[in-house]
Length: 205
Image: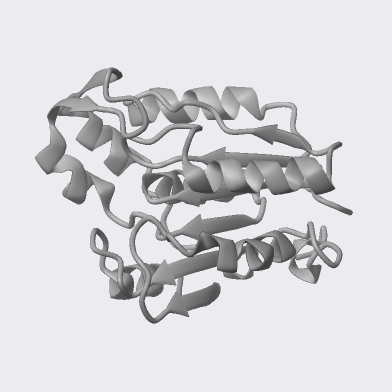
């Protein structure tokens, strides 16, 4: 069965205006206009963010939905995939955001709108720890696109976290995946949008 619903989760301080999110949205809408697309603005609280996401996808068909997540959104997407059993694509995914984001406690501004201010609270660290998805139950349902040149996250840690999954390691690149245009078709193919739905997404997968 083809993918009918696609969720995109942006990263820390990012938004639905993320370049990668907009590019995926444009491709899907142009080529598969009947697909339900949702890229919500995630609140700063991880607990609230995931509660809102799960509420938003409550009626989505688990056997034909998929999720894409970038950076912190990749951490969230892994949690969503573990909860729903759906396939997931992770773009330079955060592995231990409770550790990495501790230094950002305090007032922050959005990447795409400097006038957008929010406060990253100390209790959000514990909320992130509570969202640790654990070992991948179906690693074949995950595709991780990882840049060795990521200046924010350690590619070795990312590759280790998704051992057993489909992994594409980029020799260079950066955290933003500035060359995403070169990889978007591979992402969509894995999700079943180009060339038919991948076998690993079958109901028995």
